[in-house]
Image (tube, rainbow, N blue to C red; front, side, top):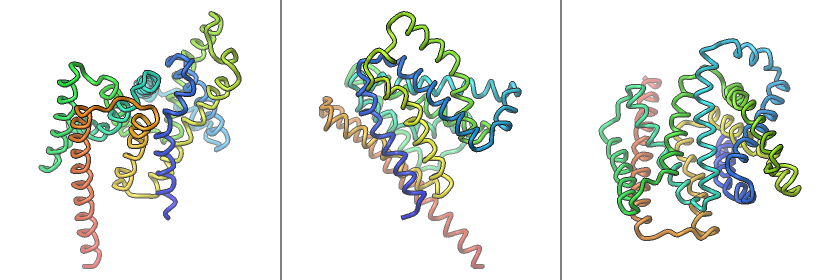
Length: 299
């Protein structure tokens, strides 16, 4: 099997099983977990930058105000996404977090139309409209917006939009994002430790180890994803990205026994149909383009 596919499957499986990791930290508040994730990720990533001898290149970006401002916004979106996700898992809403990542690709399409003036092909309007209908149906049935799902979809799609137009590579950009959040993160962790409410070093060795490992479990799937993206087509990445929310959904229903009523099934099914149409249309267009290029090369 292509190494790129293995890397991609590995990355999305790790993201899919994240709920188990964060459920194991049930005694630690979501905000504290998020800042531990930031701090330990930065330590892990800056070591990688040094080992790869990218330090001088990384340091030169710190003097560019435009880059710093761009990645400050990116860092805020990333931290919001992490916080909403951790909160959702700890609140017993793993199924809703999976919904957020199911609709993220369609949210990205909407942002592309709004901010990048991208145009949808005629058939692409159908899945976008269906996904919107699915979310509206769930909102109407429950009497409230599925804010965890929408928050995850919005923050991650906005994060992807800014990463698309931002200048740095994956390792340097993620290192800079966590560097921007490192100071408020470490200050917050020292403050709660001084208040006697910090979990690290006080909630048992198991919790402390899991918090310290947050940097590795955050960075590793991102690095696997980066390797996959360089080796396999974007259409394959598009297919693989549904592994993570599918695993999360399965964990929520089968392992954590979260309620999944007929109402939810109808709403999710509308969105799943939209995703199938969306992917098939993209695959069809990519196949047509590939055949056209082959014909030109043959001619």
